Length: 206
Image (cartoon, rainbow, N blue to C red):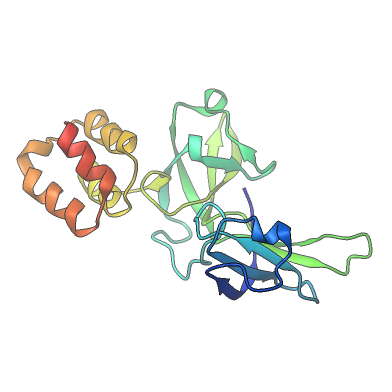
């Protein structure tokens, strides 16, 4: 999906005096934001979850022109801003190339075109080939679970740092035949250093 640029005005740990009932009913703490380029203050409220609000990244792991693989299940097709249908394109991971980092666009939002929002479509825009045609997609997160390039063992270490899901860790281990017992102490130390709950639970259960 797309992310609309906002400016954070305040952080409310609890409803301030005089808050209307609708805002009082929200889950706290809340960020109070205004949309950038609107021209007037429009209060918008978000909780602290990364599902609702996140920083605009200042850097990315990959650069324009880098060859990568990306997870179709976690990508959006650029021409329609809709999820992939992996059965139409491949089976999970597709080879592609980074064409834009932190792609953004400006969209008019009223009939008079007096309000403009800057939208961020993801962390990367990637191109890939399918049946002789070039397609493009957006990648929303800069983690190994979404986009990758390195050898399998390095990817596993990256996945631990990113606290990727247990399913993703299992995919890497079993798909590429990684011999985790041969470096189990390093695996555990990495998971502990980066507070990766998913990796710690995975090694306990496997």
